[in-house]
Image (tube, rainbow, N blue to C red; front, top):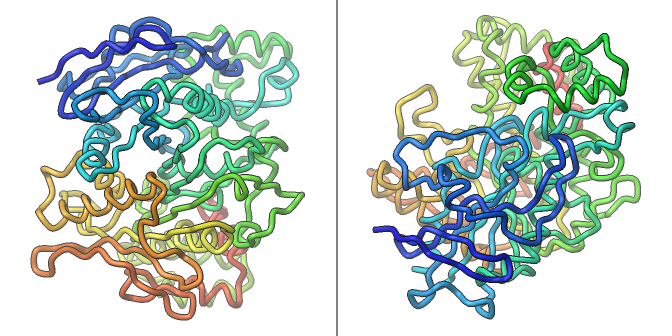
Length: 525
């Protein structure tokens, strides 16, 4: 049974929903916007009753919640607080806080999606005697979050609104979470996919924003920021789609601010690139494997977060590249031939031959096995290699995991540890749909994260003895598999569910060159 909980503090009166040993405050605004492209401004007070304003985002209150679009009112937080001795924790309790940044390729997603509900994870933390507070961030996406151009900047509109929203949210949490019983100086950011990319971009900030970072299946090496020329191309495509080309520069900007939001979202083609951009400040340049794997903090590529962020946890799913399959659909027929041709045109013939041989891909490989092999390569270069490189270059405590639990549900990737499946296990929201072995694995996975958020070592550190915590496969015949497994000669072993193919290739072909070749293939080159 749920009931309304009234919180009165420095932010004013806020209503939360109490039920199942947690209290959830949904739709708590952290920033205001003067207009759709404006800089988010930190709020120091609550605007209205959060339950009344954003009731539709209380996931378990409505079986089929309907979401409305709010271009100026969407910068809000969902805060989940555990009951401590059957009461709301007091400010002096100072519980550790985790902040979840959702993924979605910077184009989709919400802190209100049911799979991201933090109630069960927060409840589990209290059951384990290590209570934490959970916060989910909403931030601007797509055209509102990442459209930029010289024209917009000339009118005072900065790049990377979505990332700046996240920074504003973290400042709000540091300043105000104490009123909910949390410790604003003990914050762990957990990002998944594009959310993980975001967390790593925030390490460029000279301002300390959080104490620990968890990167789940995502990095700027996997999803690089756009270059200025690409952003101008994207801007031109938006202007053309909205039929604003005939206007002056200032006129176009003014029109962009007035176009109905529905029109804006409907008319802009989905293939227009809208994501974080290199702006010389928040994102100073492209990340490279060489930079990321080094503990040095280069002046040309500043990453001060390596100094103010105390600990890093990074991991991947066994077949993370399932997420890019929709991008490959136009070339699924004869995909082995397409991949061979692309690699051969981008790399030297010797380099291309080594990669193709290592992954058993030829122009005549049947489509199904060719796709599987290409996804293996994509997972290795886009997720496994960045995970290892990030851990190698982290000067503080680093922890690596490999998620190998097979997807138990019907669909094209049943039986595979597919992208995003680790989040389903982490938040415990699919536990009733799992067999006992996977349910126990999910609980162990979540417990390890809770330990990390509490500032404890979840398992053995990456250095000096390299290795990873491995989750799965946990199946009825073999029981629960959750254990730390050492690498051999600094490379993953078969027991970890990973192969060292990409690292062996890297001895002759730089990782950055292989990553560029993969990017060229995705861009139809």
